[in-house]
Image 1: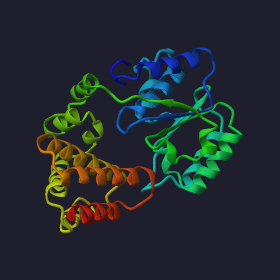
Image 2: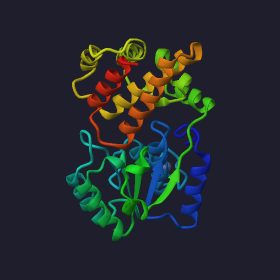
Image 3: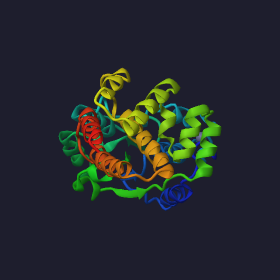
Image 4: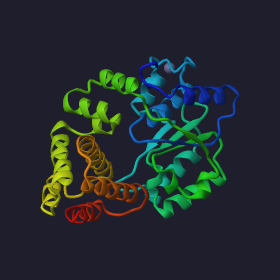
Length: 293
Ligand SMILES: [Zn+2]
């Protein structure tokens, strides 16, 4: 259990206390940066609630199946393509209306909950208004302000802190993250980079360097080689790499072009996290404006 989640002790203790006092709310939101372990804590909550030994032992059949997402009373909803659709929410509602198959309660984890479409969010709101007995919902998000206030007001929000250097090091060790990937994860203190293959990561690094040092529209052609439709996650990774390179450059030389690029990048990052703008349009904007600095 110790190695299943690194860090987040305060949050875990809070959850334990809620379970002990039988005050676990029907709906919780786990909010915090990407790739810091929010989903793992959600699974740990399932382990704590359902373990046959009541200890999140990781050894009993229930624990093993929860971790592999094979347990019938624990479900994980993730965005199909770029969003969580209303049909996914209807399926979830169908699932939560049934009695638990094995345990006394059920747990539904909705990853990237801010990617629910408007219709999906409205449908889900109905579930929150009349929560099915014995089902707990965990909404995971790194963009809390994109969830409708009607949903926010019906959930208990737990804010996750970022991981520190030691914790990141430990996670890299445990998960065998090495080479360039580990170097970037540790330097940026961001584990999101561990989710890309080595080859793709070094291609992205080259693209990020070009965008910082020599922006031109030709770069968009290279970006297409990464995959015609860059997924949201990959786009966040590319933006974080650009940020990393730019910070390195700014440490060495302080010129006006780099400062302006810094401002421009902050604007693009904000748009990417807060609005539903296509990544390609954002990159075109960044490169076109960057070219003229
Ligand atoms: Zn167990």
